[in-house]
Image: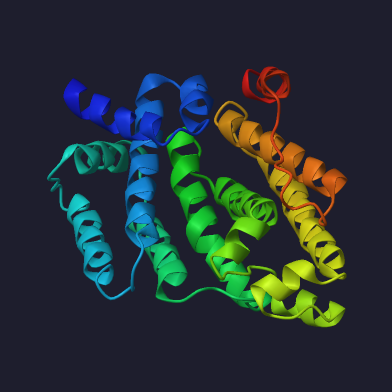
Length: 278
């Protein structure tokens, strides 16, 4: 174990400027460091695909990360992130296929702009970019049971669908529209991202997607009851935070997409006290 490696990985997490760093403070230090390493990996591969430009030069960079992840399972590591990931893999049984799924999800986003995917394609995307991270995370949290994987399956989808609803306008400005084709077609909303935002039936499509997210939240919470309660504290905290954001999005509605939706510091503390410290 290297203090310098831990500090470097934690620096990546802090530099991201999200609430993730604070949220993981409820974990014991070794598990917290494992989560920092998982987050750093996700941040790095996400940054690769978010760089402007065509996908072709990004593919070798993602393939290099596939090779580095494979090397972890033979005990090899070449920098602070992979050394911390190697420790997490050895300590908590993180699975190679889940790391690979995350990379596959990033590639889906980079190869082409996702516009009105089918429900099946959207579900696959959510599984790769969110539920796969959840499957890695629940092991770092301390529960490797099949029901913990179920939590990851349901909660990952709930969180990602909430992100999609929160970021509709920002995604549309990049030519992306993650609203599923079946919902869009049923309401007569066009596939073009800019036209979809201006369509009067957009709200009904968003309401249907919000209903799907709410169903995943319910299933996630039901699965949590069959898991180790202490291990599930971070999952309960994330679920409660994102469920609150989803409710606030629904109250704001879908015609004022330029109005940001955030939780206040008081609301975040209340959620932490209720779900993260019990």
